[in-house]
Image (cartoon, rainbow, N blue to C red; front, side):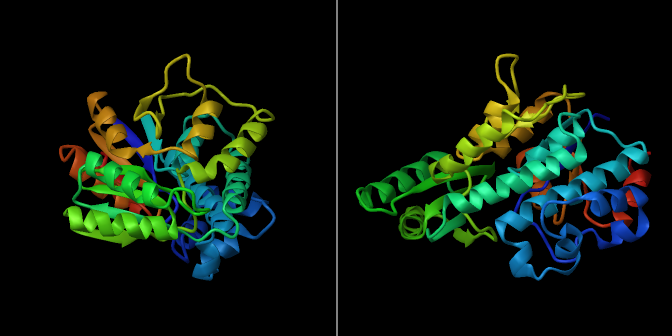
Length: 313
C-alpha cells in the first residue's frame, strides 16, 4: 500500500465540524484551544452560524484548524502518508502535514490569506459555478466568448478555475459574465451548471491583489523542508528544484488549479490509497471519477478514525 492524504478545500465546511474530535481527542483539543486569529475558531466551527462559517475570512482558518487537528490525531495513531495534496485552501494543510509549516503558523497564514482574498473583491458581485459534462476546450472557449462580450466594462471577468475531474470544471468571476458563460455552456451541451458555496472568485485574475499581499507575507515566513512530496494545484505534479513554495502559493490564489491532473500524477507515482481529510467526500468522488482503481477513505468524523485503522490493517 502507498498512501496519500488529500485535504478538502473551501466550500465543504459544515457547522459542527470537529466537535466530536474535540470531545474525543486531546491532540485535536490542543489545536483548537491554542488557535488565536482574532476570532473564536472553535465557536465558529462548532456553532456557526452557517453564514459566518461560509464567509472566506472565517472559513479558511476554521478549515485548516480542523485539518491540522485531524492530521495530528492520525499521526498519533501511526497513520502517515507518503504524499499529500489539497484542493485550493487544502494545499496549505498538505504542506503542514509535510512539515513545511508549523501548526499555528499555517492557521495564521490562511487567516491572512482569507482576509486578503475577501478584500480583493470588495463591492464586487461574483459567482463560482461547477460545469458538468463539458470538455476543457469547450469551457475555455465559452468563458473567453463571454468575457469578450463584456470587454471594456468594469465587471468583465469569467475564467475556468478548477479542473476537478473528468466531467467537472469550475468557472468563476464577475456575476454577469459568469451567467453569460453558463448560457453559452448550456447551449453547447453542458448537462448542468451548479452554484458553489463560496464567497469569492477564487483562482481568477481578480485575486491578484491577494497574491501580491501573500508574496509580501511569505517574505517574512520560514518554510521547512518537505518530509514527503506535495502535489501542487497549479502544476498538477510535485515541484521541481527550481520552483519555490512561496511562488507556487502566490500563483495558486490567482490561477487555475488542476486537481484531476494531480490525482493522475499521484496514481503514476504508485499511490493506491487516498485518505480524504475534511468535511464531506467531494474529493473522494473526484478520485473515483479520475482513477477508479485508487482506494479512497474519508475522515470527517471522529468515528472514522477507528474505522480507518481497521481498514488499513
